[in-house]
Image (cartoon, rainbow, N blue to C red):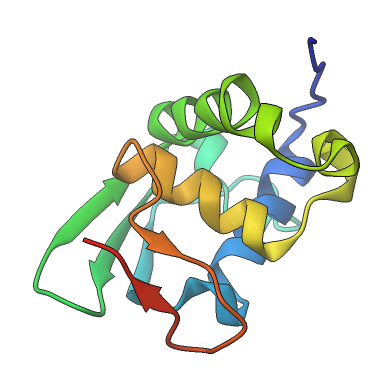
Length: 126
């Protein structure tokens, strides 16, 4: 199965918004964006060379998320992880906060380190 994604700045911005602004981000203590934007409608202009400095809530680890690592997380999600999900989750326009968080975790860790739950703090698997 192949999935064609429309990776406009707006779609990427929406994914990042879902990942950083929902209760699914239980493992993130802070996410600071470093960079400028020429398009004021884009909240997280990662496509323009900016990046995030992310601190972990559970330890003192600091991570950097740039556009290249974001794309690698998206690639892992759609290449491997989506095969085991419900077919409706493979629609890129049906993005939700859990999938957005999974993209971040694949981009930063290469796997899902902190599994999503209905609780704000989540369950830690490390």
